[in-house]
Length: 150
Image (tube, rainbow, N blue to C red; front, side, top):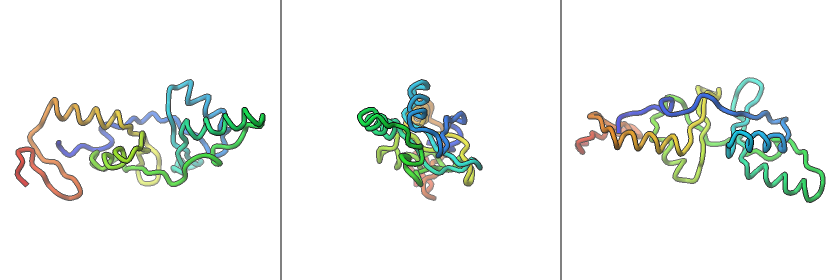
């Protein structure tokens, strides 16, 4: 695989939440848009967490049972989520996806600029398999040539 940047496969159109948003409203937006989660950003566009549909479902279930749903996103999000930089080699995402991550926020420094999913990573792999290019992979500083020579 050639050295492919995360930016080549990320989506720049990202649904986001604010920490003060209602978890129930967040769940409504996730369902309406067919998403399984989204980054949480502060007013400066910096990543502060990630909220999954599972986080929301837990709150909705408890709120429905106790008739008092209404917590904020900040109370249920995962803080300090894994993220990648837009200029990273896409192979750095593989370790995180293989650990079970479904989506990774993409940053430019500290600012959220996109999201890359396991499906995006799979698309990059398939395109590389279907259309191999002569070149090299640069992974963790090691140069691996496509002809097998290191």
